[in-house]
Length: 173
Image (cartoon, rainbow, N blue to C red; front, side):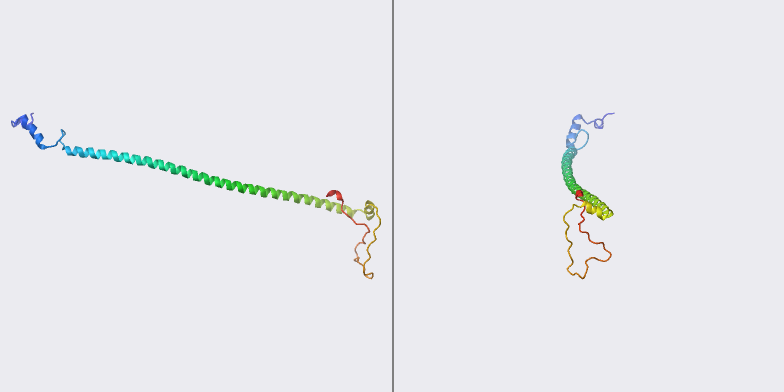
């Protein structure tokens, strides 16, 4: 089939003028201004995409920096906590050592006390003459006389005072 404008007997020259008379149309049949609008919107979308992409990268960089700062702060806090815990541990160790020293001293005092009790028990069990024989013979010391001759300083039922003084052995100290 032939185009309609040729059927009517119109020439090719008339068809060319019709296209020009319609104004700005592109070969697809759309007005020319519509393609410019599409091109402008597409360009605007590309620019908007690039701006958003740049902002996202900037935010990602900022977030990374902030995360690094948070890690640094957390590390400082954990170091502070670690230092505080180390100080507490050192003070506890010092206290424990002092408690151990006091315990050792108490054990030594207990041993000395036990030795003194044994020595005292031995002295109580030995006869009175054996104690006098162990004492070096020195000049007898006079026993002091009470100031009131009518009253005795010895209680009834108590042993009579001996002229020698009983001392614990000196080798245990």
